[in-house]
Length: 155
Image (cartoon, rainbow, N blue to C red):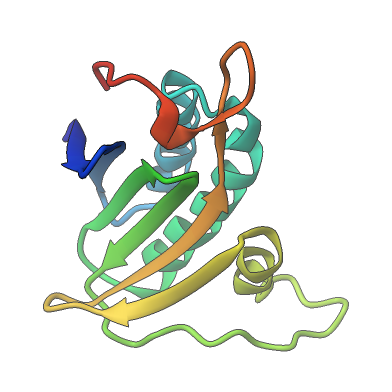
C-alpha cells in the first residue's frame, strides 16, 4: 500500500508520503525489506538516506524474523523533514539494548539504530509490537529543501 496524504493547516500545506508492506516471517524478507527501502526512498527523492535506512531496516526486520512469529509489516512515512520507519511483528516483548563483548557475533542491532537514527523506540500494539526509528531527510531539488516542501506526486 502506498499513498500521499496532503493536509492543509491554516496557510501551511504538509505532504506526508506513506508506504507499507507485509513480509513473510522468513530470512528472505530481510533482503526484500532492503530492496523495498532502496526503491521507495529513491522514488521519493531521498537517496541521501538510503544507505542508513537500509541498514537499520535490515536490523529491525532481521530481529523480527529471528525473535518473533507471524508476518512482519514494514512501513515508512516522510513528513516535516523526517523519515519514520516502523517494523511490526506479533511478539509483544519489547527489545532491550544489550552490552556485548567485542568478539560477540550478534547483539549490536539496536546499538546501530540508537547511534545512526535521530530517535527510536518501541510500542506494544494490539497484535504485538512496533519498533520505529526516524532519520532527518531532505529531498533532492535544485536546492535542498525539507520533504514537506515537495509538491505532491504519485508514490
